[in-house]
Length: 69
Image 1: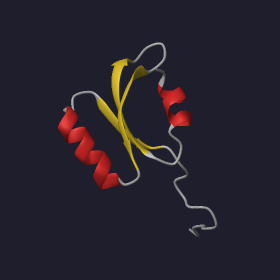
Image 2: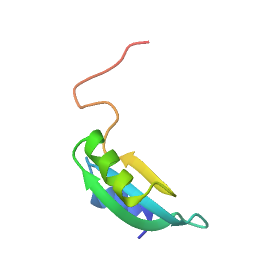
Image 3: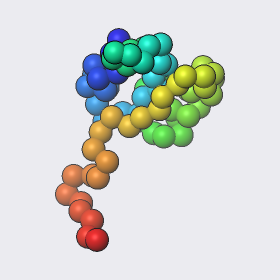
């Protein structure tokens, strides 16, 4: 599965993704998904951390919030 497809499929969740090929498009398999950061790190530790990409597939800044610089 392509990383882009996995990110769309598991929106607003944490995801552990095992990378199998980087070029021309990042492909691999979804190791697990979770609602919290701690839960996804537990899943990734159990699966082994070699070539595992952990990401949150939602907005970085929550809706209705903003930051001033």
